Amino acid sequence: MDDVGSVVAFWMLSVMTLGAAVMVVAVRNLIYAVLFLILSFIGVAGLYLTLSADFVAIAQVLIYAGAVSVLILFAVLLTPRAARDNAETFLQVPGLVLATLVAVTIGAIALVTDWNEATRGAFPETAGAIGEALLDKYVLPFEIASVILLAAMIGAIVLVRED
Image (cartoon, rainbow, N blue to C red):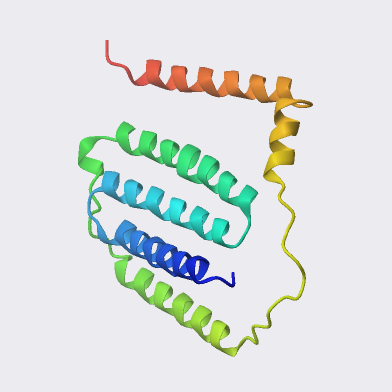
């Protein structure tokens, strides 16, 4: 990450990710909270890309921004309308205190740690090799998993459909 563009992209993605994470907590509507969570997941994937971790970035988008977010949206949409708002709770103050303690601890550790730059070269790209393996050697298990996931999605739609 020596060039100016990578550094600017890293900081812009960091601000976007943290802003979206704060909005997950701040917004009252759970649907909007899930949308901000998806934005935060995509920001983390972008951070992985700026750090040359292409496979982890792809996995972040597929697993978290895709599958986990859809699962959370299904859970929110299947709950009754009255239970969807982000109501006040007695755990709000202890949660804020715990979050502050965690943030202070992480900040103190970041300031105390001696951050030496690694002298090794760039990481090898693995996404191409994994893609070739999934479409060559492991194509049958990959397709079976796809069919099972499609059947589960159709089953969920049939279960929630009103007749």
